[in-house]
Amino acid sequence: MAAVNALGAQSQSPSARPSAFSALASEDFVKIIFTELGNQDPLQPSDSKDLLAQLSSLRTIQSDMDMSTRLQSLVAQNELASASGLIGRSVSGISDDNQRVSGSVESVSRTAQGATLNIAGGKRIQMKNVDQVLAQGAAA
Figure (cartoon, rainbow, N blue to C red):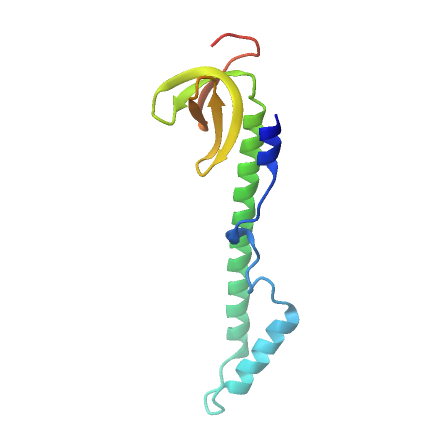
C-alpha cells in the first residue's frame, strides 16, 4: 500500500507552471497599452480598442490552456485513485504485450500511458484496457 501512497505525491510538470502571460496583472496591461500608444506613429495612430481586444484574446487563450492542463491532471489523479481501489481484486483485460491477462492486482503504477495495474505473475494492464473486474474473493 505504501507504493500507492508514494505515487499519490504530485510533482509539478513544466506545462503545469503558470506562464509569464497569465501572471500579468491589470497594471501590466495598462503599461503595455501606454507603451504601445507612446511608440505608435503619430501620422497613423493605432486603435487602442484593437490592442485591448488582442490582449483579451491572448488572455482567454492562455486561460483555456491552463484549464485544459488542470483538467488533464485531475483526470490522471482520478484514474490513479480508481486503479488503487482495485488492489487485491481480480481483473481481466489486455496486457501491454496485447495478450489476454487475468489475475489479482498487486499494485498500481503511474506511467506515461496512465494508471497501470501490476498483476500477479509480472503482467501489466493499463487501466483503460481493463474489461472485467471480479467481485472480491472471486477466482479469475
